[in-house]
Image (cartoon, rainbow, N blue to C red; front, side):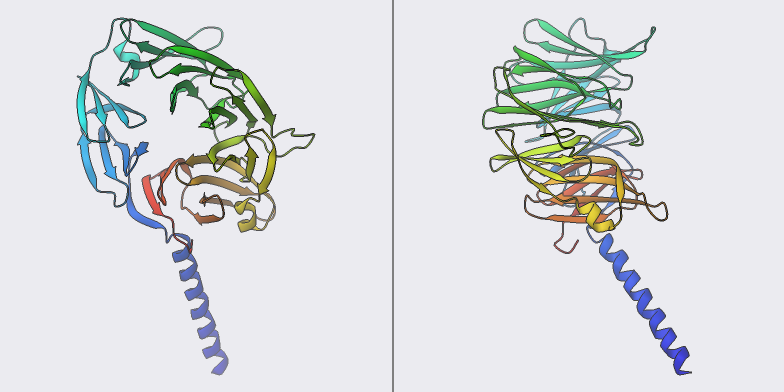
Length: 381
C-alpha cells in the first residue's frame, strides 16, 4: 500500500512539474493570436492585414484602434502607411491618424503597384512585374517623383519584394528575396529624393543601420526551409558612398564564425550583430570584432544543433525568432524567441515557427502559422 501511495505521489509531482514547465514556456503570451499577416509597427501601434481588412492595433493590449476594409496591399515606411484597395490609395500618418488620398502618376501601372507613399518632399511608388524568358525573374521598380519621376529598376529572383530603410539623412531602396545566393542592390536617396549613390553586395542585403554618420549593411539569407544559408558580410560606408571597411564572418582573420547575418543594431558605440548560429557579435565602428555572446539556443538545448531559420528584429531591444533542429539523438524541432537587451538574453518557446517579428518596449510581436501574436517579455521567461 505504501509503495502504491508513494508512486501516486511521484506521478502527481511529475504532472505538477510538467504543468509548471508548460506554463513557464508560454507565460509571456498576452493577447490572443489573430489570423492575419504582420505589416509592421510604429511606436505603440502594430499593423496587421486580416483577409482583406487592415487593422491598426494597440501593441499593449491588441485592441483595434482603426480598421480599413477592402485592403489588398499595405506597406509601412517610418510612420507613414500606404493602403491599396480596389478603388483608391490611402496614406495614413500613424502619429495622428491623418488620412490622405493618393493619386497615381502617368507611367505607373496600378495593377502592378505595391505601395504609393508621400514622404513630404517627394512621393515614392513601387511596382513589381514578372518577366518570362530564358530565365524567369521579377522586376522591382521604384518611382521617385517630385515634379517629374525618376525610376530605379532592380532585376530580382521571382517572388522578391521591395524594402525601404530610413535614416536621418534619407532613404535606402532595396529588396528582399528567398534566393539566398542572389546579389544585393540598393539605391541611397537624400531627404529630397535625390540620388546620392548606389551599392552592390555579393549576397542579399539582410539589414541596415545608421550611426555615428556611417551606413552599415549586412548580408544573409536562407532558402525556403532554411536548407541553404549565405552571407556573413558587414559593410560600413560614409555618407558620400565611400567604403570605410568590410568584414566577412565566414572568414574573419582566417577563422569561420557564422554563415550569415540575420540582423544588427547600433547601440552604445558598437554594432550588435545576430548571426545564423544565434550568436551575437559585438563589433566596434572601426570593424573590429570585440566580443562574441554565446548562443542561448545552444545553451538551452544542451545538444549539438543547427539553426534552420532565424528572423531578427530590433528597436529599443533586439530579438530573434528561431527554428532549431537537433542533430543528435531523436530528430526534434525547437521553436522559440530570444530577446537581448545588450546585456542578457531571455528566451521562450513558441508552439509554431515565427516567420516575421518586431519588438517595441519589452513587447514582441510575431507572425506565426495561426496569425499574429504578442508576448510581454518577463524576467522569468
